[in-house]
Amino acid sequence: MGMVKIDQSLCKGCMLCVENCSRGSLQMSDQYNDKGYLLVEFSDPEAGCNGCTMCAVMCPDLALSVYK
Image 1 (spheres, rainbow, N blue to C red):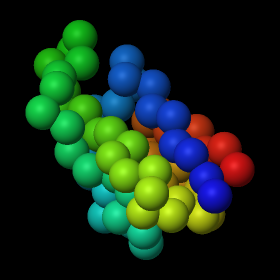
Image 2 (image 1 turned 45 degrees about the vertical axis):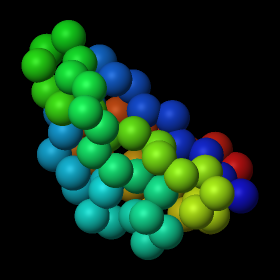
Image 3 (image 1 turned 90 degrees about the horizontal axis):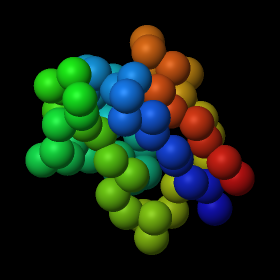
């Protein structure tokens, strides 16, 4: 089982991680960071994140870290 940590100061809400999560563990939040970008959140740990790291690989801003 995996876990995703999101650096809110780096996230720009591009949704590439959300679109590439095969387990649907990421979603857009209703919160904004200090720069005014809508944030992504690790929404459902029970969805079974498998730690594939595809979300982190797709993030152009290196805002995600995946832990197994």
